[in-house]
Image 1 (cartoon, rainbow, N blue to C red):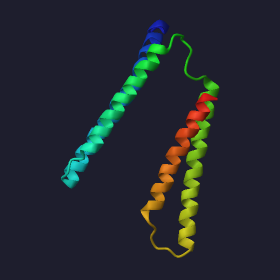
Image 2: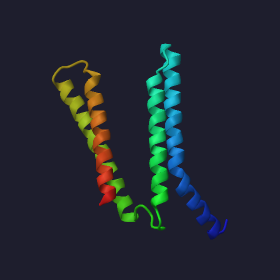
Image 3: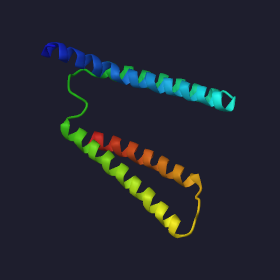
Image 4: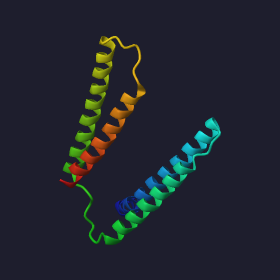
Length: 140
């Protein structure tokens, strides 16, 4: 494969990767809905409607983004990619450390079981913090 051919494939992948991610998200919503239907016997139409709405919104945003882009500059250089990677690595390790320390504290306090709500709160806090922090790191 020649260098020109590799560059052509690179441009093709760069253009279509966001759409593949959007399609994968929609397929995940459909499969999740089907699994809920198979195991609980009730089809969650709201999940399917939400997934479809998000897919349409993201597709429109991606089309606008590609139409507005006039130059061939990449979205981020190597330093930004390295900094974002480090941020995600540190945040995931810190979240795991908080999870294990919290589990140790609950164990030392004598609790045999804890509410799953605490784990969900930690999980959603991790997603929000890393999502917003990743956006900030990318824009710097």
